[in-house]
Length: 237
Image (cartoon, rainbow, N blue to C red; front, top):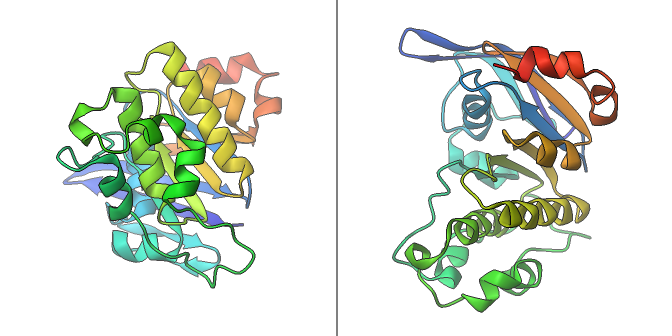
């Protein structure tokens, strides 16, 4: 198990947002976390990445307890995080944005193909074409690619990606989907939150469905496709 959360509880003031979240991500797989709006999906990613500190529960990364650690400490331990807001630096060029995210791998890097600018540009040729453009001058899809690429420059073992298809044109959604599939095949484990069911199911090895701040159904994507009533229970308004 490369990433595991046990009984996570998170509060926003008096609001009990996560009420006992459990999930696990195996090495080399893509896990999609899905549910209706307001069920706690994005909060779960923030709690895993250290942006929000859980009040109760435990998070382990590669067997190491990272509960309550600072985001930079969790990043150094091997986790990349792509927030829904993307947060590219608008006044920096593509290359400068990538350089800002660069760090060595958490381990010794032995037998690991490292992410650098050259490798990023091979996977993201659109960014290579716009390498000297500032972040503010990129399209929404290009900013999403840059946010993902910048996280990869940290050489993570696990990549958390929040709503990568949000606000993108259909053709760009397909491009981002293909990039995430390539990243996973390269050896990075992926935890994905996305409202686009077709995209999520095309990428997922396993699916975790959330309802009212708790994780419920957990199984393979193949098994879930045989139970449309379960999808309806967790996803339909």
